[in-house]
Length: 457
Image (cartoon, rainbow, N blue to C red; front, side, top):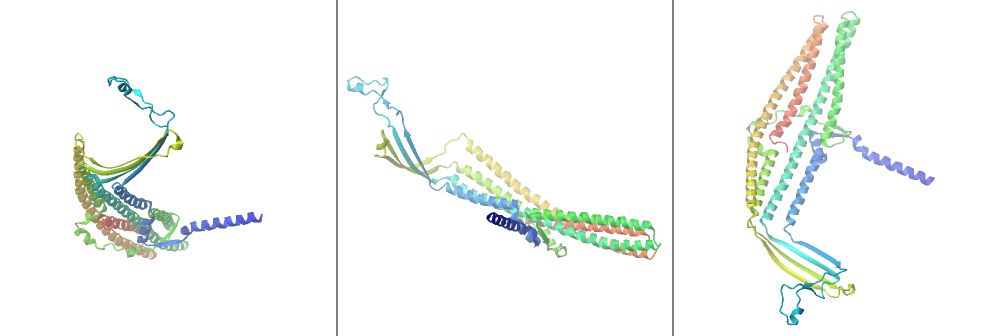
């Protein structure tokens, strides 16, 4: 029993320790800047990990292609036992010894000798490619093939960067919204308490208290909804990072530290930005691959030259105990020359098709340049408009705050109405909401602008 109890205690300790190790990362709070989140996503986001594996696969593809031009060695072995050895047949030469003329139309006869009962043989063959145009082009193509996957990895990282940045900014904006709601709730709570006291003293009517109470309750409900959405925004950020949604993180970047007008004028003068866009680079790589495909098809018109050699041994005997007493070997070396002469026009038409594909890809590249330029102009103008709207909303927010202050002072002095205060509160909440939306639009527009001009790597 002591032994059993000891095992149970050891098992419980092991399970508890394993659980603690697994729960550790989720219980510890990580302080993360935006760049920290992006770097984390580069390491843990599945799409980035898969794109990295594609690059590794391309490296193996290069080695595979190179290996086709190296010596190829193969071996074969076989063993047969014939219950009834196959006969050997041929012309009846006995008729010649009897002096009769040889008749080529006479039936064949079976010879008394033939195949043996036991046969064992093995061969070893080797070939070496000496010249192949398609192999030479293939070596160039696999390097471009790897370049394609490397650029695909870069595109995946850029998309991950954009997704993480937008999710990060969404959390910052939600936090800012909660701060504004807290400030409004505190002000409204103070106004509500004062109005309740004035109502008890008979200076204001009950309807004034009810109006403020409804407005206060709506504001508290709005904050509770925003807090729940903030938790969802955190989960979305962690999802974009490839992190467990149950992990705890704290964002250390501040909205006031973000420079919105940083190098804004430089974007309008950057006319070669499209060369920094990964989409344009991918199309360039696609043009290269199409050109190499056409070049490879041209190479099929050239001869292929290779060397080969082999060695083999055969063991034959009617009795197994004598099978390996004697070996009959053979060996050879040789050259192979394969010259394509006529394929019925198949190769030339395939080449023409590939030339058309190459021309289409070049047209796509030119079209992409115009499309990326249009996209960049749209992102620049949208960002500028959003920036102007943000500045206007900041000013409107300040005015709404001042109007509310004046309305409250007038109401306290008895020269204003509660409806005027209520309307000012509503206007301030509307200005805050519009400011939050304008702030979010500017942050998202900033990310889109940097992506459009190839500033995100």
